[in-house]
Length: 458
Picture 1 (tube, rainbow, N blue to C red):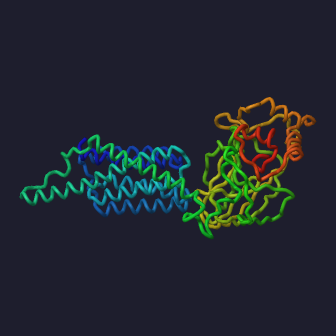
Picture 2: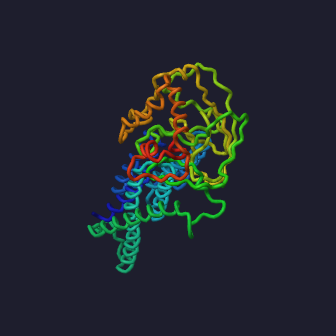
Picture 3: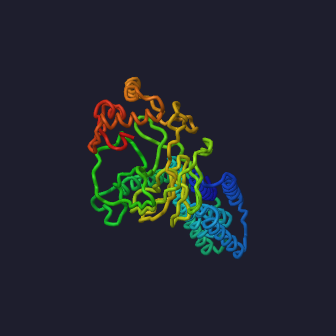
């Protein structure tokens, strides 16, 4: 492959990889994504055919200024999210640089913009597929930067050649053919090594809690007793720690209340997970709609007065915002927050500092109709998954135990209370529970150890 074709292909593939990693976040509209992909393709064709766009410097600066104004408006008025507004701004800068690749520093700026896009995607993306685009980006970026250095050396050689021979400069790197199989394998190896090193850093540093990597005073609290994942297969004994992680002030304390961090809807035998994780952004200080309204008719029951709370949360390794019941309003120093289809609240990124916010919540109260239900009405869910879509190792044994615990109950509410009483009367609360190697987690709790902590009982 000719040098020029290889170099231009590498920088455009790098731009495509960095942009595609942002599309995985599902924060960019489809029409905008198609527009950017189309412009990257057009830029590659035009640059390959030496069709340069000679924009006056003032026009280019005006376009960049307009993009920056769009970024400010998006951040303050539309998305109200710094990361999302930055994603749009970086994409506009990317297109501007692709169509103005005239000088060496233009390529350097393109490398920088694509790298910033990868950083933004890493903060916004929760998809495993991001790793594949990261690997692809590392390979083509390595390819592009090596070729850029070779381009600079070839241009310097041609300049000296033209001076010494007294002839015009030969066309820069037009006829050089350097992309051979050894070169390709070398850049592939460098990219894979960079990816593996990145993965090692990602998994080692955030989880290191001793030695030189131990966080000092004032760092994030990583052992708060709260986790966004519930994986019974990897759980061990729980250690008590008197560290204060949160302070909550209530307007009128109810007789009993659970503060929710995150909730799940599917148990697969080992872990609880949330399949209704699609999020929507909401501005702070405005009313929050009920995420269940699209799946059930609005209840005619008179709603109780909202419960006002104020939270002071120490730096924790989580993006979750805590609130009981259904949050109807959130006031915080953050411009916006996110809510998924389960009603879980979260920030866009981990704050890393102590935060203070206020929440108004509706605490659910069971109506006589609710208490009299005999058949479950589960919300419609993508993939037709239920709250316990799980094949038990010994299903009949679990069924017989459930029937024995609820033999004198008729309604769903009575059965739920009967199971609660059965667990309290026959199982012990203990923090010293080791995962079993011989039995599935639920069967191990119900039939063998018969002791556990909050996750087991839930």
